[in-house]
Image (cartoon, rainbow, N blue to C red; front, side):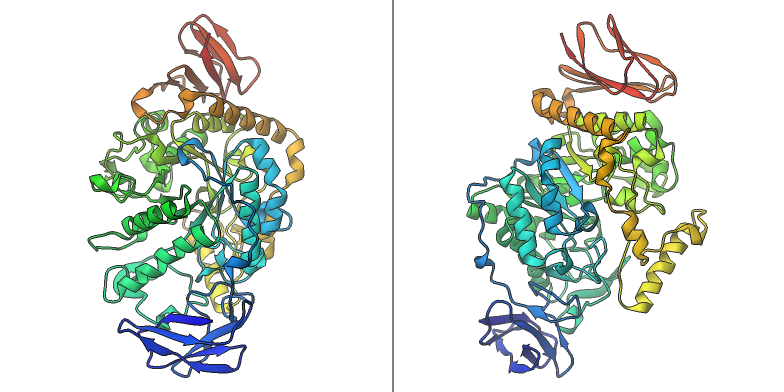
Length: 576
């Protein structure tokens, strides 16, 4: 077997096999690449000793069965017996995504545990499973956004074979898979990249310290490190798409931005494997260039998360306007988000104290994901509250209806479909006691600034914080969870059955609001959604010849060209 390593920084590197066998790596070319040939079968443990120092994992380790500080282990991807040869991929604009965290989604907290729950997702009607990061991160439990071994699958979840079983099982049920990847920073624990080469630069500062080196000396190989990682997930694990975390944290002044390079390479790989492959970016830049086609000066990413719809809807549903919610003003902002994608589209941002964003109305809404909640917006609260914890069940149903009838690609967060009683908290399992204490202290300090008593903020390191975040599947049959689940199923079935709800053209939308009555009317060709956010009954004009397709509450009545809505309710109407 041939071992390869990019290591321009050290003067000497040894390959260490099975804990004791040492082979000196030889230079290949003049760009810092080293190689060594060794007798090693799949499943062999190995690592690298840099300049005679301790043995550390391979930066491209495919498996870390003993954690981020343990030895790397070889994997032969060709040995897995795939059954998805007939899989033809997913058309993203047609789909509904379902984001989940492997560790809290099922009682088993593993890839196999997710497999056991896939029939629920099929019955619900979603089409794509979005996995929060599954590359190796410190400890057994965590969100995964502080990973360090980007090529290795988290072993407590089931390792490389477990992830392949999950993807294969999803494809067998007609479900696509998208995976969260983090290329803007690496976690502090187990991060040895600095020993090998200039993966980071002190020319730019980020919230996590030195920035990833995307445009300085040595950056070609650093960029290749991330691009080839993306290709690995899509090729070797049969993943259908990647969601790239916080691309606004990339600092890249190259003529070809990393996102554009990633999009080009994924396009080539898609042609090679013969099925659609796609990229979704998370960005708070409100910059449509990210999803514009490369031919017109964009980066060519297929879609992006769009927080403005979430923020506007959150303010209407909860009344909260602290922090970044200060830029969103009730129904006016919600109507703007539905019509224009970005509320901050070049306007003044009070939160940022500057103008922010630019218009995106010339693009299809299929370039943007819409959601009422996601892991960030739930888990980055001190108590991890979901929308159903912060507003009534009635208003939660209204929020779901607006997202699932909007022109954007919908995204659900695991458990929202039955108004899960469990929170989704921030949890970690750092084994370094100093780092563990720093994380716990930082969490307390962060929320004490918002008026929380430090002792009331759940400790991320406490196993009880993780346990509290596990979904309670048994509650789905109880009220009001059962009614919420039925509502989501009905909305998803309607979306899939209605061509007008599949239309991504923003100029085909008509949105009208009544601020005093707190009502909203959204018309999408033959479909009208009438929403009452008020705690009193309200009447909404919907036009003559309408029929009630779905109602969130009993007591909805059509009278001529108007619909009477109970408090905190909504109706979806068709023609005739």
